[in-house]
Image 1: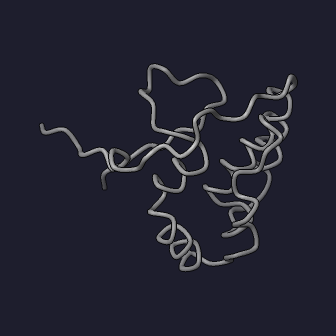
Image 2: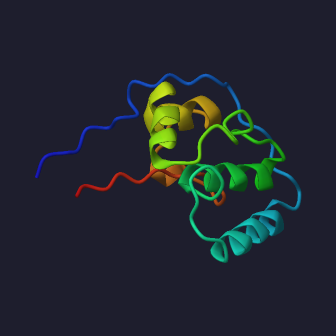
Length: 117
């Protein structure tokens, strides 16, 4: 079995250090997750990328997607936003920092999982 290519390899790190976590980040994160479990999926308000951004906001108090909110409401619109930012990996690296090895991840870190269909 051959190794899957890592699409994150070519995305440079734009920020040297990420924001600090809030002292109550675990409670804030739990509140976001609980609220989202009860809400239906909706492009531009409760989708995968904005869920991750809302979690980061709960943890740090900073919204990595503030400028993207309200810019799309459909799958096509979301695809255009992602394409304009180099795909999901490019957007994540631009907003959150570089890809790290999975064994270095800490509780509350955002992860991208590549699934092969």
